[in-house]
Length: 130
Image (tube, rainbow, N blue to C red; front, top):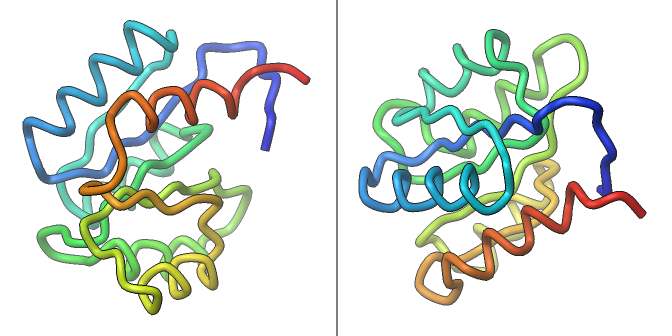
């Protein structure tokens, strides 16, 4: 998914861990020039999808209220174009990764095995023109 867009790329970061969400938000805004909107729950993510219209969603699985998987399932039922989704989660079992891929995610990062640097670089690379 290499995209060239004529506006500041918008990312919806759905993460209830305040430290990680602020770290990622600050790094993406500072180093990637992204506009990052935070959602702390699955319900908030679904609400912000229509309002913020992100170019990419970063989604945790274990969230208050709806899980990340439930958010993905509900997104599929929404009309119109949906943003690509990258999961960033502590759930790293093969069954979780397979479920995410079956629900259309483009990548799956396991928090314990992936540095913030790797995540930021991967996201920046998605928006570089070919």
